Every structure is written in C-alpha cells, then in structure tokens.
Amino acid sequence: MILIPAQTARRLAANAARSAADPSFDPAPLVKLFTPVGAATWLASELDPDGDTLFGLADLGFGCPELGAFSLAEIAALRLPFGLAIERDLFFESDAPLSVWADTARRAGSIAAAETALAPELPRGGSNQLPPPDPGGG
Image 1 (cartoon, rainbow, N blue to C red):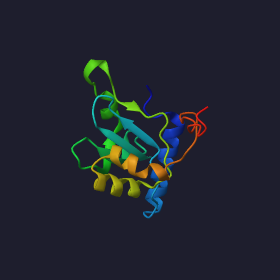
Image 2 (image 1 turned 180 degrees about the horizontal axis):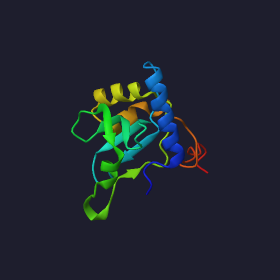
Image 3 (image 1 turned 60 degrees about the vertical axis):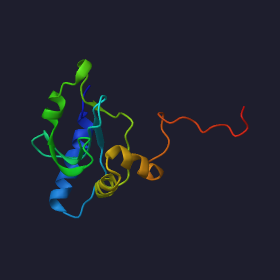
C-alpha cells in the first residue's frame, strides 16, 4: 500500500509551507496511519521538503499522544507480525485542526479515543458510511 499518495503529499507539503510562513496556521490532519495489530496511530498534517519528515500527532499506544516529527520511511519500513505492515486509513477525513486532535487525544489517552470523542465534529457521508437505520423497521 502506498502510505502517502502523490496528491496527498502535495497537500501535506503545502500545509508545511504555509506553517513556515504563518506560525498560527493550524491545519487539520490529512492522513491517518495505523498498525492493524496494535494501538500505534499517526495523524499527519504536514510534509517537509525532504519528502520524508511528517509533522503531526503520534500515538504509540502508551497513553501519551504527542505532537512531533516522524519519518515516513521508518514507518513504512516497520514489519509487523503475520507479515503485516503499517496501513493508511483510506476513509479518514477531518475538519478538526491538529491542535484540537492533540488536546482531545491527550485528555482521552489515545488518538482512537479522540476519534470517538470528536466523531460528532468529523465529516459525515461518503461511500464508507452505512445508511441510517429505517425507523419503520422495513
């Protein structure tokens, strides 16, 4: 799996350039990477010009998510049990700024818990959403 498609990499790089010019810029994360056999999760909002250094929220599953830089190459090189690798959440979308994610994840103890807490604020719709139940039962 391609962890960061080219179009997303361009958007991440644009966020990094804007952050460099405007320190108050607080973009929403564009990418969610995760391990399918554990709790590690990364939300990335920026990509440095080196094409490898991502900035965002990292949660390695120890109850203390933190903002910082992480290497795409190192994440991609991780080999997990059963021949699995890190994956990208193909359906991840968020309008919430990274600072809101960081604050919520720190208080909740994980990115996964923050995702639940922020669910009412996250975008709705799309092909990955199930239709609401029919109140008539039919």
